Length: 493
Ligand code: AHR
Image (tube, rainbow, N blue to C red):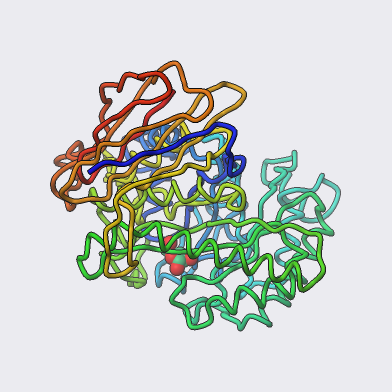
């Protein structure tokens, strides 16, 4: 089969926000304890942070980290994670039926995020928490000393305000599983008042309101419309969450998942426009896809009241990595509206990195995340893709090629991201530049294989990785390369 991709560096969708390369670090399972923070590990540094984990996270190059949840946040008392460690309470975490020791808390997270060079994105508790708790947290994090909570921060070792910019107004409040779940009107009203108090504390902060937890919710997308209409003018971003899966072992459909991701983003973008028009507003709201990933093989919210229980430690395979690559391409194709995104989560819990006491391995999904995060920069290009279309049970017609590209006008660098969705057919792709073609490619990588279920493990950590490829030569403004079935290819110019 053959396909053609037309590129034009002048035809741009939008500026790529570096914050689409973010992750969720939740107090859940072994994400924090035994993941990020494990003083008992031989690999821990003097702060108790796993040095091998830090290295791998730095390779991914996260720009923003959402914390402390997830569902966990809706029962979380932020003060529990401050002050001397020996005095911090052990609590029952009702979201994951686990025991939270609070040995890693607010100051530890800030240090960790800073070490990674990632911006913190604090989720406030709008489940069991009050709007006053939310405002107090902003004072503690961001205000100069002189009043009670900022003074407490100084007492706890941090005189200078942290200056946290991004805050989420709760988590998945549409979900009946959420502690303190509300209907859309009640949530919008509480979130609007929380926003008011938080912005009175610090007018510089940016706020994210909760959108639907997923597209299967009975209230989707009515929840989104209602919340946006009632308080859209008070926020800067609106959240999307979604987890994809191959539940019926229908790999053809699963590999067409980006059709669904785009449809989801288009629907919420439409709700934003509708609310803006209805409110005669001039205010723009962007999308924060602050939980996304493949997740379907493992279930379980019951930690049996253990500390750091093994929860949803999903092992990802090749087809999962190809879906993750398409998801990242979706963010590029929607670069005009999607400005924040966080893969959920960053270590052990449905994560690209898995740890045991003295080692880690990188999952298949590590590679697309790392390649996009390090190389997609500047503007996203509006590609014209001509490729054979095949029928899928879940999403109808899907092109064999999923593609996205970035071009940085400052550096003149370009990056192309290509997924051949076919399980059996290779694809000869011709790339044609309509304006200025690059002088040549500088580097390229590929992930591919015959077995969509192939995966990595502690025993075989390099079963599925991205390897460097021989670069195709340019013939004037075009070139042709052959993409193997079940593959993800990156080309830099
Ligand atoms: O990432 C796991 C969980 O999925 C999060 O805690 C929750 O927000 C979502 O339902």
